[in-house]
View 1 (tube, one colour):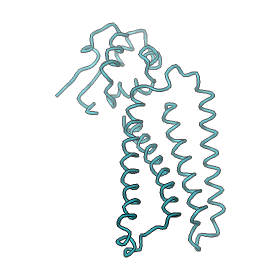
View 2 (view 1 turned 90 degrees about the horizontal axis):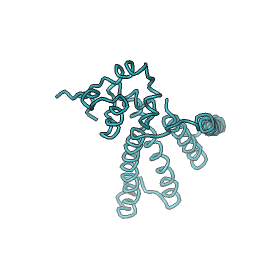
View 3 (view 1 turned 30 degrees about the vertical axis):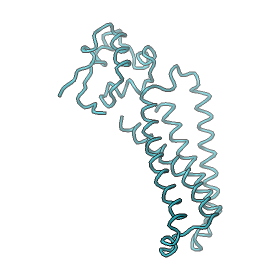
View 4 (view 1 turned 180 degrees about the vertical axis):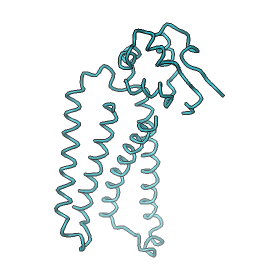
Length: 70
Length: 143
């Protein structure tokens, strides 16, 4: 998946959003908790649609959630 | 472990059990292992029933999950189908090629009669199913 180049701040964003759990975030974006866990661990790169949904939950831009490093 | 991952495990167990039971029923074991043949058959039946019960229990108790399947599950399922398709294509080509190249296979002592071809084709379906589920489990661990 080439996910090693994509890092994210989901854990920190969840913490600052009232200590939101992975399960709560998963429910809000229509994914499973395991998928959110895999994204957080940078094992899986989400689709653009799911990435936007996650950013939308925290009300921030996509680049604040995900960072790409060459 | 997600519901889909549990289904991958139970389906893998079921396929292995059915293939094992089918193989023993059709071909049996070599004489040196004939003493454990009935025990092994019984084990395969128990494994199949165990997998069936687990799938049933998971279906009942985790049926209220908000999201049962998402894009990651579909991606992983796709990888499983791809590998199963490649393997099944290769095996079926090999099996059917002996109909065309019968003499070559006969000389090598690998020729199968019609009944055996059918058994091997049935076995191929289960091997493809095992490949599908094993691929899924591999990617569930990796991503």
